[in-house]
Length: 293
Image 1 (cartoon, one colour):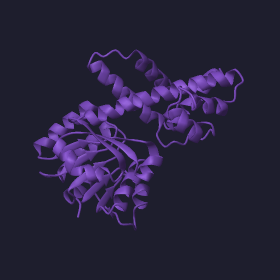
Image 2: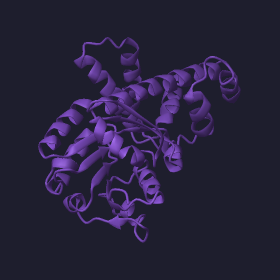
Image 3: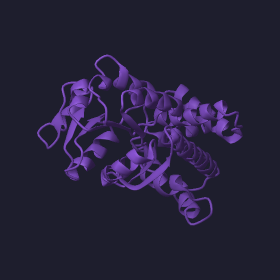
Image 4: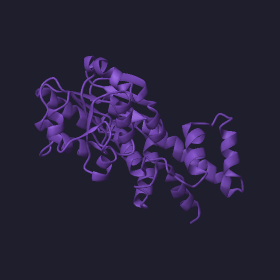
């Protein structure tokens, strides 16, 4: 028998991660503020929790998949939060994309309660989440990581220990800064070709056989951009948040980010034009709109 689990946050990524854990035979109790999200797990093997505190008191470990650090902090230490049900020896695993500084503070407060925190953000998108093939980057105590490595492998085909508390969340922000850069750059370059009369599909075909290829051109363009769907399941607002985390960390360390700062302005501008809820591949549509003005 593995540890009993609580799972909080049944969104685009959280729901398939939770399903992977259920498919692997784990005993999972779920909670979400959205009744519709909870309803999708009603009648299945998962138990439905009535409260965060009640969920935390009934399981060995709690997994979070939430939008940002502020929500994580509220879920853990807000009124009726998980902290009211957590006790010594339990583990909190945060798969969200959170601020490393917030994660370190949270880890210290939980540590005073005898609760360990692993920051374990994921990368790979909705499709890989459904397949249980996410990349998982983990920060926190090495002993806790080794103890829960098998659980993380239920939804991650590649699981990395990257260092102390907050290291996982910083690694995720760095990854998404690179992803945001390659996507915006590829979109701008393809739009240049379109403006000159080239076929965007042909451009991508050639790039993917050449040195300019990236995950953005190999996966995102064929699946979500060339068809105009922009249905990748990871919002512009979330990508912008992760880029900001990377840039804010750089500012704390007095690290120049000449390219990163420019990329950050692109995503901020998309936010200002109302693209926050759209799939992040809609950065192509945002940039396309600029070329048409």
